[in-house]
Image 1 (cartoon, rainbow, N blue to C red):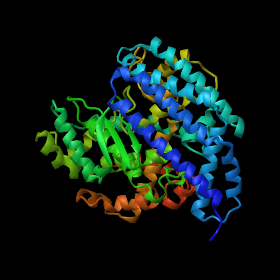
Image 2 (spheres, helix red, strand yellow):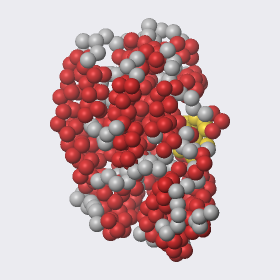
Image 3 (tube, rainbow, N blue to C red):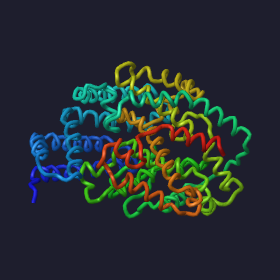
Image 4 (cartoon, one colour):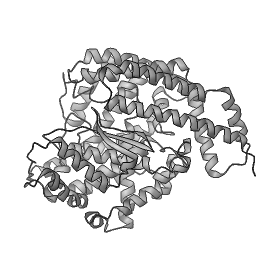
Length: 497
């Protein structure tokens, strides 16, 4: 038998980290979904303490020796991939002092908790006071991480979410989108201006909306023995692969957004639930990157759920749970779910306007992290870019402007590009699927969703972090990321029909 003593010691350590991370993830879900307001200070301190403990474990000097020894051992291809991911996590952790890890966790918890009241109150000065500390600590984190690679502060932070990517690569992709997206939005809006769309007539009671959401989750093969659906101020998918926690939010005058939000989060959840259980406690068993994660949620929400076939499939469910009315036909729902109308809110944005929201945030957070602007400059820049990119006036409306997202409250700078990169990956997957199965839309309308899930499972879910992101996409689609698929998808959906 091959000697893999050092590697086995490492797997034991990373399994411990996984279990501590499990507790942290569930505590974080509870903090967002269930915890009473007065529990925040104690919860923040407990979670910061947990992060410090995990940091101490991964920065133990013995791990460096074990990593070096394991590289000389006779490992399988999968074990080598796991060792690669271990080394990456170890290297990043050792660049950060424990006091910074703790301070950033506490500052983020304070900022996010206060944001829940400050956003409805349109209290930018109060929010900015907390955000300054989060920005200061995030810049320090990025500076320390950047010293290892020689990249910019923002690139170092983005690498946490999208390993191997760079802001130059993203800027090139986004720059191309900015060249053609405004004209496409205008074309589509002109085309849709003559279309008649019936608006659903509410109210839609929350219990009925929840029941509809659960029924659609079941249709999408969510495993309810390994997860649940709850409510939070900002929808998310959390927990762990063995216990996935989804949240959504409801409005009684609009069921459309909550239903699509649930489908979006179910895409994240199916990825987590189908990660390989045999090495779920190891780095190689985790999701590959946040853009790949977003590609799963957007495969569900944008590629599948807004297709005419899927809307035909769920129309009876909508009528069953919300009652029959003239607006509830498959054709009218297709018009509703593909309506293009620039607006303030990113999470409510249509598929065509969404990239502009992401590009705006990418440009602002990159300048913020690289020290080109300060927190005080955000509102003016936000207003200028919203007007330029979407023609929307957000002056004085901080609540629906620069305070709308949760990401910056806890220092998740570098995350936003993942959304549009994920949309591009999703378009690429489905282009391949449609080539392989020309009757895909008819299959979906008939309730035959398994071919889609089988493809995603084989190409993405079961692969976890075995491959680098470029390798994963190459194997899944036969080529590297090709933004042309995304543009072709939008033109086909919004202009060709």
